Image (cartoon, rainbow, N blue to C red; front, side, top):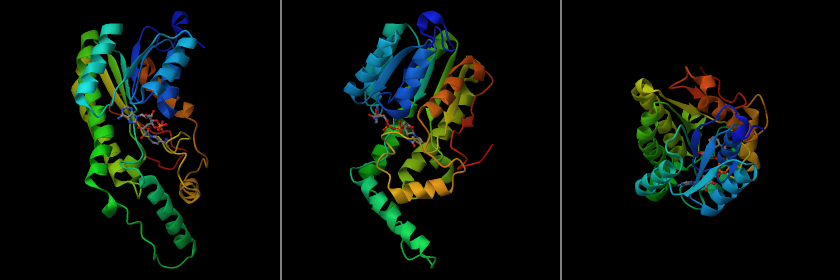
Length: 284
Ligand code: NAD
């Protein structure tokens, strides 16, 4: 593996990855470090961020733990000040932090409904079982989902822009989801937040190109992480039936897309949405 001293596709770059204590974010931070980046590791869980940073340091990568809730604009501002103070700038931002439920118990309810809907569909009769999820979502759940995904992504972009503008270059990579395009049933708040991230990505790409800052999105399909561990067998079957490559992806299969977008190999890409999704959604 290429460490800092050996060069690599991100040699000399400083990267901040949010939600890097688990799953896709951890895979991205690990791959970026292996390709020569110095990495600021964010997570709302200080312990999870420290675990990832410790693993990076064990590989000879310079890492900084910046524990913060990205839904807090004050915490985000303090996080970027800490990154600037330690590394003297920022080249790459990956907005990856995310949640699958806005309130405890939502995933269980979704699983139960998915099982019932699937059984109903397999019966071959007109639908009698309904999802009935949207009408049950509370204000608090809706607000938290939007706050973590959409507001968090905006707060981080807003703080990153002056640092990247100062350096005259930058790459922002935002984790959206195929849910932004497909409008997955049962997660209207998640799908809306991820679609909002896509609009934000395109607007910022238009605004920041003249400063040498590129902004792109990744729309993953279903990836094997702690976030997807709780999904029910029926929900998993629904996904697999619609997906030509009928398996969950490894987080590394998303990290490779993030590395491409972060590096100069994607120097003419901005405002784009790349989707490692096993074929569940086909679009240009
Ligand atoms: P994960 O649950 O394994 O990891 C998410 C990490 O984000 C966790 O470490 C968590 O502590 C952290 N986090 C949560 N809220 C935070 C906050 N407010 N501030 C800072 N950190 C916070 O999930 P994952 O599957 O690795 O997902 C990563 C991203 O990819 C998310 O944005 C998710 O929506 C998106 N995504 C995942 C999938 C999938 O199938 N796993 C598919 C499409 C998109």
